[in-house]
Image 1 (cartoon, one colour):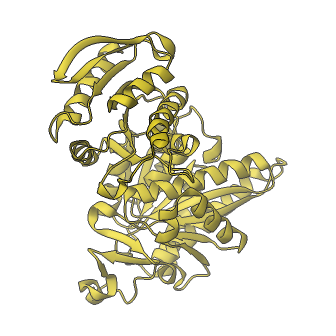
Image 2 (image 1 turned 180 degrees about the vertical axis):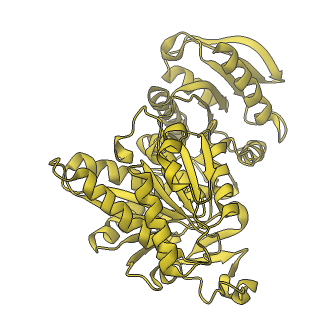
Image 3 (image 1 turned 120 degrees about the vertical axis):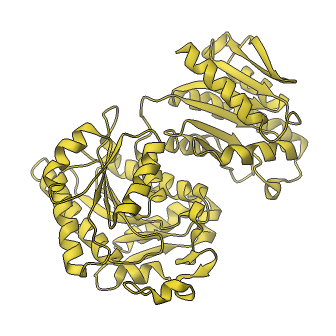
Length: 447
């Protein structure tokens, strides 16, 4: 079963880590996202893989291969893939600074995955499957970002840091594609940060260019988690389209330290039968931006900008896809303005259209994702959202802080849904978090 065919079943995600501490750190990301995760290690790990994958969503295997001879590291990786059998997502967990057998293990995983996929589909009459690697090595929270196809550590090229003198794996280059191709036959296509910043259409065009040129691995720049999510959302869309087209299926192996793998899992496996809290912010005030920044520091929250169309208005379809891709988070907040760089002069027409678009996005998300509670900030946005849900109004329960009110939607398509509304100029840095705490309690009480 491919990731595109995974629906309501528990996912089977296999992560092969090159060392124990890195594998545990990667597993923690998946566990915090609500996926049942286990790390296995030792000589008997391969024999227990199938049973472990039946019991958990994510299995992280410590291959302890970072400093082995490349051929040995590759052989271990291939044997783990074979022992696990069919999984919904395969990931190679690599070092954040790209030390060790990055290319050798990635190539082994790709070839082993392709062999398994070919065998599984032999004789069933389905379209052939092409296995590709997606390498997004950025780990923004740890100071590792990728720019121009080069990995940076706290703003410095790897070869310009103490890693150049690493006893076991001295770093002589920061070029991700070069590291992947060293000693392998892997061909790479790199998506530059300018393309990532340009948005889904530009990313899609570059991915298709890479696929058409026959590469093995798509490498992508990223500075933030939002950039990573943009990339994996496009990958997921293209993969679903390929499956529906029936000409050539696409299957992806994640090659990264953890954030990219988790984002890819979220993009492919959004249906977890797990409810989320949804926030919608149309306020551009400084206090709202401060509150959103505070929420973004909480790992349970995914705070994202609304995707924009050519006119600079919230793009309904693209934003809903981005929300679905992040739907394993406990709370998702869609905002039109996250920092001062997002501020711009609006025409009167755009000022009216933005709340309507946010309302349309909210209604679509509620139709697509199990939403347990709704948070809105900004009076125009709140009014538009309630109208878009055909609500009669709001049944008031309590005032959380002055001018921030909790209650339930009355009437319409979301009748009874817990809701918290707050003015854009209301509160302090932690007020939005207080509102979500109330919303979470109300949602759990509702059952």
